[in-house]
Image (cartoon, rainbow, N blue to C red; front, top):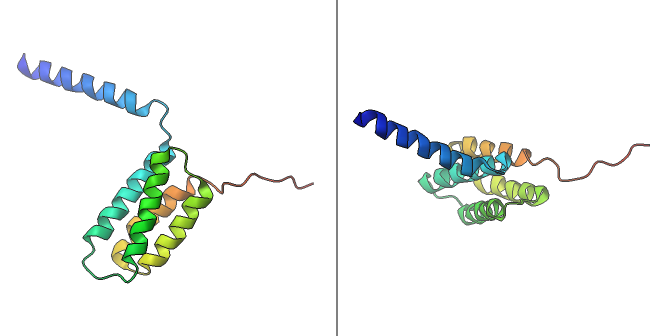
Length: 118
């Protein structure tokens, strides 16, 4: 039947895409990518003038570049997050997307190797 064939082809395509997308993908990078994208949309949609909008945009681009590199450095991510947070200040409309970026950056840990204690 027509409905079954279309559904079958669609399901098959989704599986192929999902398998190709998931193979070797780092979920931390995917989470950071989504969070940066959401923050970018929120910043672009924020109608009020922000004094440090340009700095926020630069740091979002730095985070996006780190995602594209495939091997983000935790210390650089935290530095960009700090500058981004300072740039958007206490704008409540941007608080949730900023928290999402922070949580995604935290997935990368400290970037420091533990030292022995004794």
